[in-house]
Length: 316
Image (tube, rainbow, N blue to C red; front, top):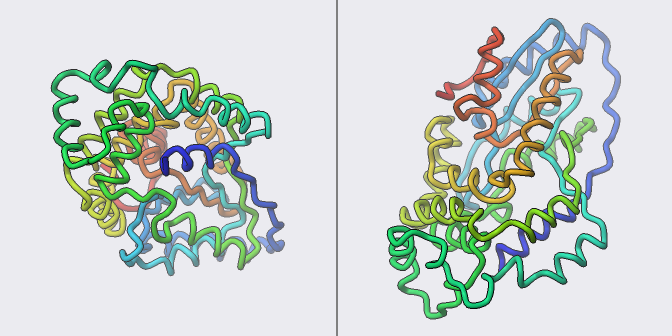
């Protein structure tokens, strides 16, 4: 049920009220751009800079689920954020009271299998056997009738150590605090309507979540250290290892990034925001999921293919 509550919470996120950044002279903006580029090169969090004329874009590859006891150095990331004129954050779900009521009304549809069905009705015998091995120690057998959407998140949390937003401070937490202190304008790259999110939860057939459960099972088979190893790779800026991690692969297969209706919106909104940043004077920081940036054919590959110099850690 923790997974279900986390999903429902994403439907009712509220946008933070943006605050205006202090005006800067052209000389101050030029100095800021130079400082931020230098800081981005040595930050503990994976960051890349792209410069086009008087526009500088800093892309931060973010992850969630950092263990609370895992330390990393946020100093340079904080400094880079404080010198930006605008910070773009991930999308927000905007849900009305009616949307929330629909979720509550259809909670069984979201959380449970259709009556009389189990995971074995959807998974191949091989994957069902792997799932049985993972759940062998469970006293309660209700996982068999849990919806595949919820089962996938439970596998990542309970078996692979993924804590989601309940983990330690991640890049987004650090940047939000730095932006508040420096009074930097912070805004999401876009929103997804609550009714679309609710429809995707209610109407998707169980078969649509099979890739999520398979990927989550592969992560769970590595045990509770899977999330820690991913976070350690992120801290060390071993970007290809993060993108290739079983947990990152699972998150890409599970809702909402694995949803065929929602995922294209998320990609398109980031693409539009990046294009705008590249023609806007000054420094814009974008905090995006690391896979979106560094996967094959992702944002960084696209920028490089267009002839931009992308400065930062290796991503492929």
